[in-house]
Image 1: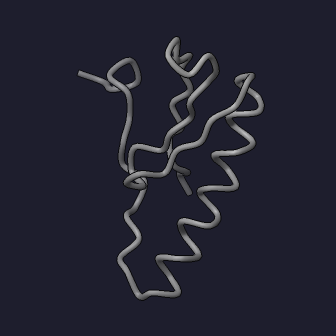
Image 2: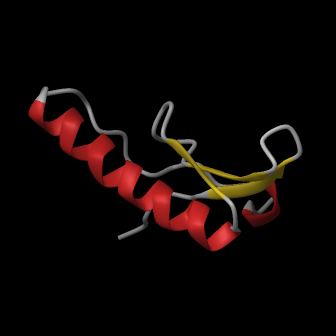
Image 3: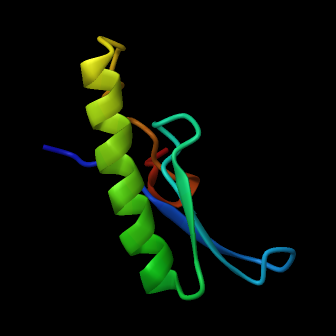
Length: 72
């Protein structure tokens, strides 16, 4: 089973790292290090999925792939 892709990037404005999951709308987290941002977004993913399930909202299948991984 494929899992959701996670982007991690440095934000100059926030002076830290942002991690987001493109397939899960508005699922993102902040950390002072890339590892901390990853840890936090994994917590956010768990809560996002639990909330969607509890509220009978659709849970998207993982499909986002950065261009670098797409085969022409």
